[in-house]
Length: 270
Image 1 (cartoon, rainbow, N blue to C red):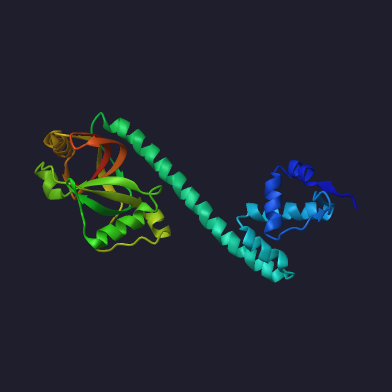
Image 2: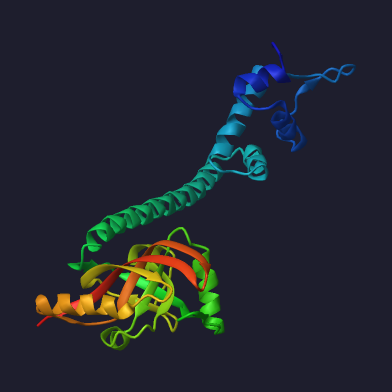
């Protein structure tokens, strides 16, 4: 049977000679070797075997797992292995889709923010889970909050920063706020995030939507005045705390920061 040098095989398969040598070190393949020159040679059976190794690696198998697979002669065992890999790939694919959904939601909110710069308008707040890690300008240091924060930070590509002002503080124009993370209901269910002492669930509801830029020494009362005037003109009454989605943020220090919010304020008609 004709044999081929390692360089020829590496070029054909689009991998490095070192990768093929690593397969050899792991005991996954055994080339022919000339005793004097120590050159490695491979026949067509070994070439096909290398292709199978690459295929399994692209499925996400480690070299150790591939070694175990190559030792089995049982189709049911191979089937079970592939089904487990299928579950993992489906989960990864769903996670990727959630990331795309998060990006699309952010783009949608940015478009709404452009409209909201002209003033308030009516829409809907999505169903959200929310946790606070900051009260005004200080971290909340309770152990439960810190533990939950660490959990949420693992999924920072799916969450978004969010501010909140209670109904009482909102009505009186007081610059008291909470700050934390939000996540949409579908994503929270996938990640098994549930309502608790430190995680609150917000149902979807009709909302007054407006754009707000948080800066040092900004007059929050002007924003509240705009909100209350809009509610009065449209025969609405504010019916709960505000929740925001942070769209853009720049921080330097406590005297120099800029945080762009799209804000949802629940309402009901008079």
